[in-house]
Length: 149
Image (cartoon, rainbow, N blue to C red; front, side):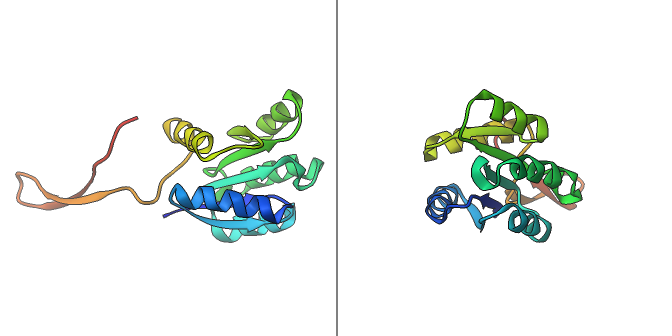
């Protein structure tokens, strides 16, 4: 199962995002500040991190940069939740965010953004369906079967 981290200072927002992500097949962890989020990324190596702009002002951009600098953070998909105008979105994208959301967002929009990230190769999935098949050489192999995007 894919893992995710929600970094938001508001417990009700973390809970709502957790509900949405769990309905999309993610295991979810939460962090209430930038320090806790960075420690969680180091320990969990989540596939997806959702960072709210209000988690710590300038710390938000620093958090995105620090996640990207980690060996386990290079492949992590980071979604930035904007609360301001285009300048905050641009700053987050420059810091290393893959995409952004505007509050309030729903399941359909989040699902769409995740599908886009998968199509761009920015969101890895751990539960790739594997099947055991036998080819003409009479040996058994595991192969990945799934939809191409």
